[in-house]
Amino acid sequence: MAFKCFSFENNIIRVNGIEIFKIYETYGLTPEIAQEVMTGWGLRFDDETMKECREEMKKHQELSRSVATGMFKGGLADKGAETTKLHTATHLLHQALRMILGNHVSQKGSNITVERLRFDFSHPTKLTPEELKKVEDMVNVQIKKNLPVTVEEMDKDDAVKSGALGFFVQKYGSRVKVYSISHFSKEICGGPHIRFTGELGHFTIIKEESAASGIRRIYAHLQ
Image (cartoon, rainbow, N blue to C red; front, side, top):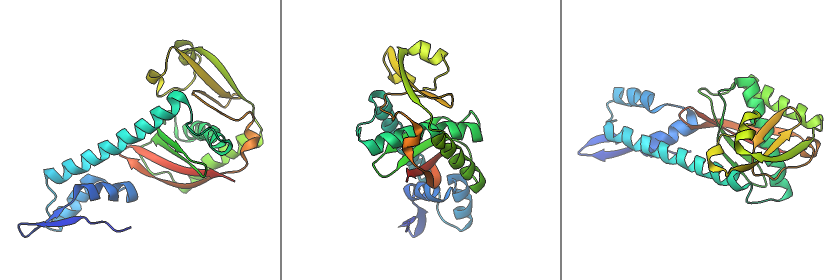
């Protein structure tokens, strides 16, 4: 991937803030570290550069939130078999991340196509290969158990009191659906989902990367 990081202004090389965000998103190099390094090289990394970077980061976060809100308020737009399977796999992934990394993990965005799922979540650092394998293995164990997926409709307040996860709960009406994957996962969700986890096949994490500051992103698919 090529980045056009610099421009010439009054014979001074100025750093492009939008491109700095792209570098951060791709390689995890924070704007603050980039500023320190590039200033040391004699480049112009000023307040305007940092502002551009922060604004691009904010737009990216708002886009992730809007995708997630649209998906979970009314359920999946595409209710085909493959996207439904990946939707259920997303619930397994979410709970596995919380069990492996800690309860600070919460969903920040999601996008599902017929080929793969993309899941954004709160976590401060890049996941190690060992952590990714533990998460992947935990999801596949739940798939092999062929756990039942059940749904119950209830008042939103009762759903929250029951322990159901609902990170976009303010977007729902007074009545919500709660999907449970046996005793492993319980979330407020618009659906739809499959009936048993054994229908999913094999879960594979394709890639893990930074989505924004303090937010990681996982791509995965089913085989």
